[in-house]
Image 1: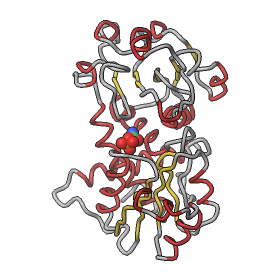
Image 2: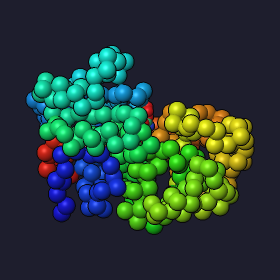
Image 3: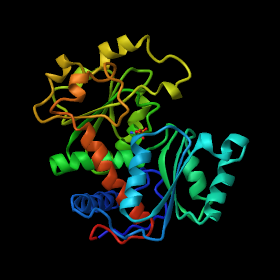
Length: 311
Ligand code: CP
């Protein structure tokens, strides 16, 4: 059986199939813990986790906090606007000061790609990447794959379409790395400006026509347009984007009956996905959020030195 040997989780691109499977199996065990009357385990008792979010977040920040609490860790939340980053302190100095306060685990969300790796190389504390610029969002990738595996019982051979702003999406990158490593067939769909053929180097197929995937895909994962990362206009208008790539009722009617509709959130209703589809019977969007808790418990547990899936 694969052993976990990493202090940090910065990206999924460096993980083996065995390591990803170990994370998913450990998350499955923690999901079971969440269904007990007493949802807390003492695995991280005495450890301190600092949630350091330099960009906004609802799902990731809250579920890391809840995950740490369920593992009996002490948790401190820091927002960039209330930290000394505002006074010109560097990220490294802020993090080293947090470590001097005996933080064992730092969960970092940052607008710069590479920020988590930068800290992981300089701190003894575990560093967990909660999203760094357009690079990776490894726990989102894991919770998406966990949700697919739970529903289908496998990842190998699954057809997964990821639709939207792939160029700026850390979620897409983490999903592609995990899915390709575990043997899924991934197709990236979107405008030529946001889904260039160079992305085929990740091991995925690229198409600019959503019609190419609708009738055959097992999973359709819709992504938000990342306006905050785009420095120019990549398509003429949101209306035109929806007309060409949005999951409308008419398009959803062409999906296979068992096709899962996924979205990492936050949703822009009526842009990348019609409201009825986001809330409909094929949507597992809120299930993804629930699974995020178990996945983040697994990541914290393993990076803090836990032994693996058999809890
Ligand atoms: N999916 C995701 O990362 O959501 P938040 O930005 O709310 O954390």
